[in-house]
Length: 395
Image 1 (cartoon, rainbow, N blue to C red):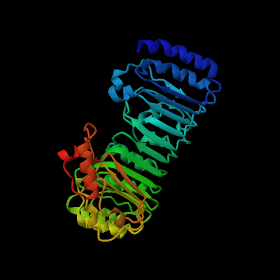
Image 2: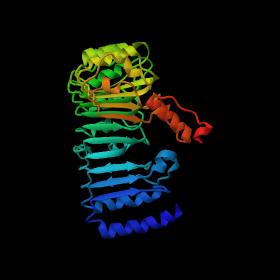
Image 3: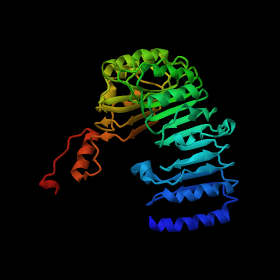
Image 4: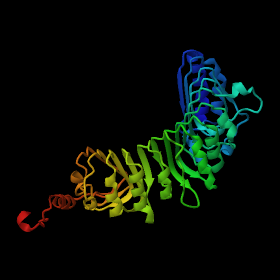
């Protein structure tokens, strides 16, 4: 760390003197050290880079292992640029932003909060279209942060989102076409879901897990342009499916407990046009009735199972083929084998069978050594022939 503190100022000075006027992209990635006081040198130089379009600052060690209180800052600098269009700040360093040309930002949401004393028109980031919230904020963000981005079209949350912030987003960002929550969304009031109707331009809506004290009811009837909806591990009330728009082509659904079959059957009746279906389970086998109900999706091209158990003969329980499925994907599933019976018959157009992070019973674990005997057992099983034991005549 001490060595970097000595080297970085000299290296930065050389960049500033020789490249400042021509630099269009600048990536600052800190490894084995911390950004801490070193980054304080950067904001003062950025205004002298008239062609700078992209700035990335990455210090993973502070994001993963430190709090803002651990990082001592004498002041909070402002990143000022009249040319910057893309800004990524993956670090736990406090700063503010004054970049009127900004189109894409990734970092802490509170960095976009308007300063206390400024001209309202100068505060607006009218060209900002894409926001990735990748780092926890150092102070609370409220609805005013979204008012600063009147034309925001995409927002991706890579941190947990609380109730109030979710409602503020729905009320203030009517132009959103893409909203994704890759961590949990914590809802304290069921009425919060009604605010989703204000996002009438949404094309893509993804949740990882909606945390609520009861099963979730959603009325998405106002989202008439929605093309992709992923609900992750959310426990959805089956009646919600009746409000889903016929415009949806890609659906991710958690099927669980006693409503597994109801969820699939209602989806088939209300959304027969689906081309991609992503089913999430609870590390148990999918029921035979739910599996057979999938046959109602006549246009399905991609079918994914996540967190299910599959025996070798499970797909033989389907009583008809799915003629249009081209990709069959298993994600975080437990399977007896990859040699599943009936795949070609049940999915005659199948082109890709994908296994992602799956546990395969007849394959060795990472720390398991396969002996010649293990290989012979596997070969005999695949050929459906008896395994002949070694005797002295063959030695």
